[in-house]
Image (cartoon, rainbow, N blue to C red; front, top):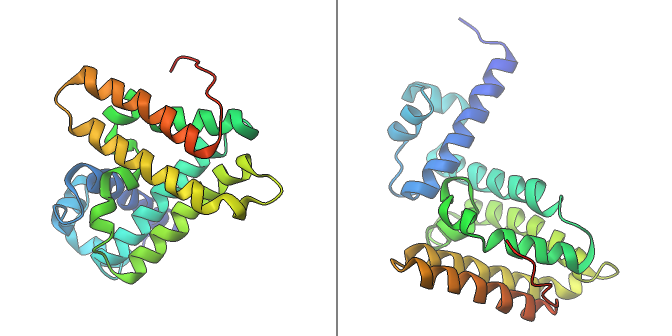
Length: 198
């Protein structure tokens, strides 16, 4: 039986979204094709209709997650420094800390992405630069490339801060770390903190 292209696209989208959540929860290495397809409610045989390999899915899912982060967070932030602060506050929020499945793939998977294929690293690089360039455009609207590396450095610091906050057993210390991370990221980016609540 042949499926319509809409069905095929919907199935592909379900696999990508399911994989993105599973990778962030269990890691790339801890997520085999059988488990991924079971989570998606599909058989293993359906996998190869949509992807050439697990590496193909990993690159696609990571790029998709970063595109969603750009579309849902960065693109909706206010212009200028106020928008940068909104993005930093979202990233280093308790909600993001506690919602890894729906959060940033950088904070959940960066160490594994570094061990992935060149194609996956390229997909990650392209995706993360969408996010970085959206932030940089708020910092230096006339020349965002001039602050790209500084923005990428702040993003790396935020990802590390979020990772550490998730690993701490002391909830109060985790909260303090997130607050300090906001201060640190905004200082690095040259944005004065408005001290509004999260």
